[in-house]
Image 1: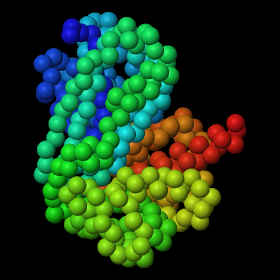
Image 2: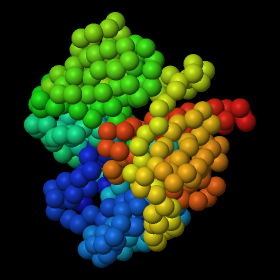
Image 3: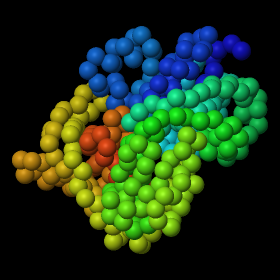
Image 4: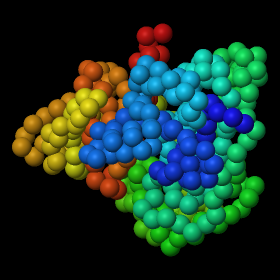
Length: 358
């Protein structure tokens, strides 16, 4: 098939775009997070060598849409991850109808791929890589004629189904081991609530063991990413089921009693589309019911109310990037801290606010 066309797929690993490109006989221009273009020395490489297209994650970006359109008109191949972020638990993240609308506008073929086993090789939360096999599966293209025959909703459902790779379903079918003596280490980055005692930020990991420091509930993780409860009565089959329960729980009235201890912050920045300015390197970040509070060692106090946050996403190195009253902030916490809980609490609060306004 001749270019131009779009290349889309699931997102599980930091090196996904490089892995796909290394297996591709043609050059792919990847859509990359805007924060990468702000890192010292990286912007020239992304723009001149790779030809990457900047995308401000979590926000509508007309510049990105125009840049993709221009690249396709020039006969280029553009690659993107419609989910916009790497999976935390191996299950599909999903995306809204905006992607389907773009695909209809561009009127080019769409090639879908699956990165299979990459979550098992190194989950987003994991400290260490495991030993195991991975696969890149490419599917027949969706041609413009077929795209034109579908409504936006039908196309959206088709793209969700085609790109929505489930590691759990794939693993149940293939039963491939991913081996490491430290397979569970780092899981507290995604598991922030104990299912037994309902305490927040009490989960710790060592080796293949996951433990609650409050009630001593514990489970072990096997090479197939299945959980075995070793102490306590509550049981989840895998990390994804545990994580799904967390997201559901923080959206209930019971979550109002949760008390989150402060996390140690290591980098606080603000900035614009071109550069970042460092404000603090020593501070605490704490979840409150109405927002997030930052307290510096020098005594400065900054409160970011959920209702005034326009967008919030997680990018590299345990960092959350958000717009509060249209001001950009990047907040990084220590390596084993859970930045995910802030985003999922924000999403739950925003959903509640939108429901009240409906």
